Length: 475
Image (cartoon, rainbow, N blue to C red):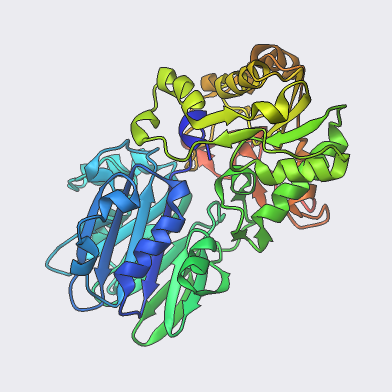
């Protein structure tokens, strides 16, 4: 994916395993399969033998664990994390899992998502005497657990979770137990699997495939799962509400071979392409997708229109992370370093360029120019999501409206800015239909806030927009 240069990034991926003698190695492989969810840092904490050991660092999984660190991490349980920083910024201290040691025992935390009330909780905890070691919102949970008056750890965790607002998928590891928790709205994907007698949990099911584990079920929103030598127990820490899983998981973040909430990502994206072809057909000679997330969409668009699908854009997978930087100048340079047009495919052709989203517009403009420079006579841009008009507060780094081109420009104005011959976005209704959310479901089951401004939770102490639970999806 072009997350590094497109400016649309998910916070992280988490993986855990309980009851396997090769826990650290399997966690390494699991994190490697989740690398697309975060490239800034990685870490593993191992337990199950009376103590917690850890190693973490900045960089890719293969870089962090490249000098025999895995062999030193012994134990039957492990949790791991790959990070892309949103809340709290970067740096070694914020690389997860976070490990806390005290006289009462050690505790490690791995978190996917973003807590929208982290600042107010942090202020309150500091007023009560808590001293924070990081700037990560994840650390808030550790302090809430520590300050709870409940007599046993499970109840302290449950109480602490009730104070959190926003998106969170947590893995918690102690010397004797592993806990799994998903926020009441289920913004982030989280699945439970088995590998022989061992239990496995991961942000995406593709991590199960790489280690040979079998999928068991989704972790339910508002559920707390406890795993120890006595087995598995499940309790609720919050009442059931309608699920609001992030739409961008289907559009962009998740790997095509993953299933999210029972829906295969590749199939969903092909259907997005077919629906896009129905809503925005165009006369053209070739269809191409922007690697990697848009390939499945482009195939679906081509199948529905009868226009041949071709690899008109090739991704260079060997560009060093020197170019994975947040500055706008490096983003623009990174497009050319990451992508190359296939001149023999696009020269003299009317090209349909399919992409998953437009955030700032810079990348789209440069890709359109590259295709024209390679000889394309026309470039028609088709986007497999509605216009992103509102910021995300749940773990995607679009936190201000000003950086979103669709928030201040019409579709025609965006078309002119990216220099395309035509431009069309998928409708919200088409998005839901393509993914497989029936119109008569109790709720949409997805968060559409970045398209609508209707947030499922309070933001900054109050609800932003109007979020209404109805018997039908609100388009």
